[in-house]
Amino acid sequence: MINNIDEYLEASPDAGKEWLKEFLKYMNKKYPEYNLIMFRQCPMYKFGKSYLEGYIMFTTTKKHFVLHILDFEMIEEMKKKLSSADFGKGCIKVKYDHAENIPLMKKIIDRVMIKAKNINK
Image (cartoon, rainbow, N blue to C red; front, side, top):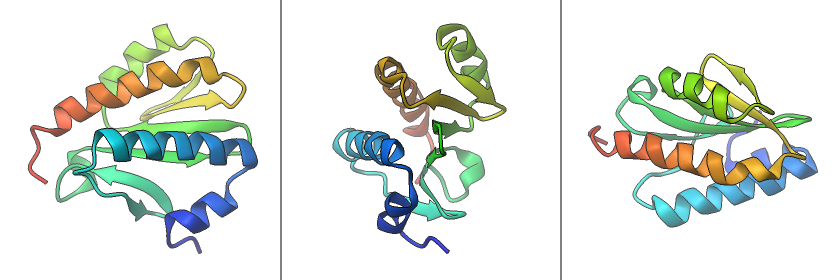
């Protein structure tokens, strides 16, 4: 069972490690007031007392880096902007060889974080 971020990184595919490090570095630099936790063995930043109040979670799969958010309207909006990505109800899945999507994914995070500022930690 994965209990911490180091174990998660170790278990991630090589390409996934690089993407995850990039996004964790981004979160730590831009949003240091939010703590990284492990939720269901995955790295997550939650904004309230419950994850149902909002979160950003990252997962790595064999072929994709996955950004999970609880903003379904934004997911729908991104379907038009990230045509090379796959989508779930609350996630955006980007293949590792589509690194050109990283800046837009960071903008998505920034938009989610603006909303998070209104939620009591």
